Amino acid sequence: MKSVVIDKRLDKVNEECGVFGIYRNDDIDIVSVTHDGLYGLQHRGQESVGITVIKDEEPYTLKDLGIVSTVLTEKALKKLPQGEMAVGHVRYTSTSYLDRAATQPLVMRYICGSLAIANNGAITNFAEIRNELEHGGAIFQSNSHAEIIGYMIATRRIECDTIEQAILKTMEVLKGAYSIVIGAPKKLIGVRDPHGFKPLCIGKLNNSYVLASESCAIDSIGGEFIRDVEPGEVVVIDDKGFHSYHSDKKKTSSLCLFEYVYFARPDSVVDGVNVNIARRRAGKLLYEENPVEADIVCGVPDSGLDAAQGYAEASGITYATAFIKNKYIGRTADAGGNDKKKKLLKMRLNVLKNIVEGKRIVIIDDSIVRGNTSAHIVKLLRDAGAKEIHMRISSPEFVYPCYFGIDLPSPENMISNRFSVDELRNEIGADSLSFLSIKGLHSIAEGCNIGLCDGCFSGHYNADVPKIIYEDKFAVKIKKV
Ligand code: SF4
Image (tube, rainbow, N blue to C red; front, side, top):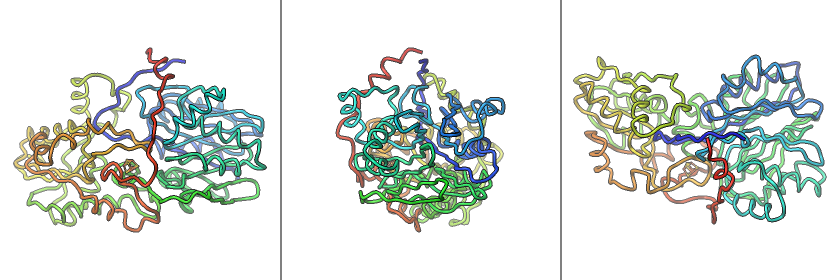
């Protein structure tokens, strides 16, 4: 198994995956629909992508490291048959290994047939479950959380009448974050953890049901959004239609607030809130919490742009484009030391000198993690002749870890744990700096149907955090490039 060591840490927070599924009730090309749905979810993961089609209960899979356009080519897609359902996945991993064995959908064969699993999330009791299963003789091919979920469902299925009962039993043991699509193989199943950390929604394309991480994927296939899967809900789609079950495990719901700030696409609606509106609210609140006199308001592409518009609308200050982003420099080019990273940052963003020269600028970004990107942005603006640079961040300061599948650095590597806001302002070279308050962050999600997680900002988690961390022996063994 060949694996590639990568360095992904370009000072951004990274999501861990997008999932998609379709159950065919029309004469439609489900391979191409799943391809289009995954294109709509590409922002949620760019390290691997895959589709499993289930035809006559047999799974056919196409998956590899890479993005939709490089892996799911027209030629490659022709090898997949048209079946009764398809499951799709785009992946980002928080490990520093690109592990082919962990690419999804993960297909497992067991006594009742096959399971094709696509998961977004992180199981917080993964270490306990995996250790217990390994000591019971279980063999795993990867360090993927999807694999232990599949194993648990398969073992429980033997003592249950239906797959949905086996899933509900598995949910009694699983802790943490998971939004899963399963091809089972006569049923397409969507599962959202009882906290609802990750989004998952249901749509329809003509008479065919669709499951997707975000509503933008349903839009991208020309489908119709129906509703979000509720926290703790299991939705089952089969030849008899649509069924819903709920886990007995009632938990405080806890959707990741950073979905609204950064992860989700602005054209998605997540748990009742339009992401573009949420980001504009963040900009408005940033102005109300920390107003400043300036000539123009600009956003750092892409997720700072909506908040910058909101700031401009609230303040009456002119909105302007200060940066042009090179969209063709992908994350696969992230390898290398600090010099290479700086070079990449420079190539990714170029400043429009004619816009910023001699101006007092409010510049809005979604977050500061390690601080190097912010320092670079301020320097770009300063070098282009900006008179004053006032940085506003549309989220609070990151100071605590995330245990639920978001790739944050350890707290000692978060710059806000090393500097006060004023020291950080000085460090990045801005004239002023402020962050959205935690109260403001909750306000941007006004209208959300479920509870919210702000753990990495507040240190308060609505769910159990891991007691032990799994020692990833597998990754150590494959560290060779
Ligand atoms: S801890 Fe932070 S990043 Fe993690 S789920 Fe909660 S809000 Fe999202």
